[in-house]
Image (cartoon, rainbow, N blue to C red; front, side, top):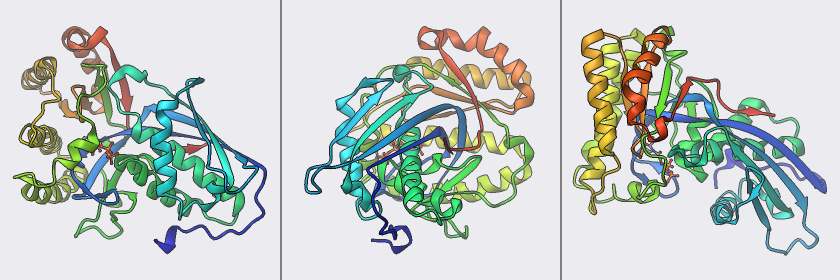
Amino acid sequence: MLEEFTFLATAKWPKNIQTKATAPSNIALVKYWGKEDIQIPKNTSLSFTLSNCKTTTFLELEEKKEAIEETQIRVFLDDKETPSFVPKIQKFFRLIDAYCPYLKHYNATIRTSNTFPHSSGIASSASGMAALALCLVQVEKSLQPEILEADLRKKASFLARLGSGSASRSIDGGLILWGKHQEIDGSSDLFAVPISSKIDPIFKDYQDTVLLIDRGQKQVSSSLGHSLMNGHPFAEARFAQAQNNITELQSYLASGNLKEFMRLVESEALTLHAMMMCSRPYFILMAPQTMEVIHKIWSYRDETKIPVCFTLDAGANVHLLYPKKYTTEVHEFIEQELKQHCQDQAFIHDEVGAGGEFL
Ligand code: 2P0
């Protein structure tokens, strides 16, 4: 157990506590793929926090009648009771018990909603776990008011990580680093931190349009994907490459070198999928339309010299990344050339955002 994140209050327990928070999704530029117990990443990852794709969660804790009763958890997604979410939350609550011991005194009702459609192929685990973690640290604040906001946010990232690794990167805004890096002071496997090195202003409001190529459920869960990095023939080389890519990317973020930034980001996306394609068992999460879109992005960039590039998550959707000053041109490109490859012609415009908030 880590003392830094233990709960110190021995306050009288209120009968009822309500908290509310919102947290955005994030998109990794250097990818997290491979982990050890418990939720320790095999390499450092670096992401843009998004703004429009977010989860809002309302947590209500009600005192149990008998302390020994099993904690009851009810989850409502968009006001509809969703029992299928309960096992994941139960597992999460068990995992964080040492850090949130107050949870044992209460039954929990969680009401959550996403700004992005459930069937968008955008994972809600990062924003969802981050929003829940922010609700939990707010409970702690109500029991122990002297806690500083910075410590609360750090603990929120720590708790969110235990729910879902990438969720640790959805607490703070901007460019976020998770995972110990030998050259970066303050980096940690246990929680994510905003990068402290210089960032060119062009990256402060970078745009991300998510092209919804496949809005269905993923065929292979990220948990399984991560586990397939154990014993993967290229695992060690990949983890070492990611560490080097973090160092390189930091220098491009500082200098604003978009050409090298785009090369590195696209290489990371393709490497992530290459790892999937040579796992045992192997699998492919890209769809034919993913490839069509990638080739169109490359042609458009060649022809127009507009610095637009792509990245991929663990799915078929394409994230189109570009500086804000090219918004008009890129939106036209999406309308004319790309949206026809999206399921129901759907896409979501998003951009770098400020991180989660207590509501
Ligand atoms: C990332 N992904 O860095 C990578 C790139 C997907 C592709 O983190 O098992 O949902 O909950 O820790 O965080 C997705 O995996 O996995 C992910 P768990 P998570 O964003």
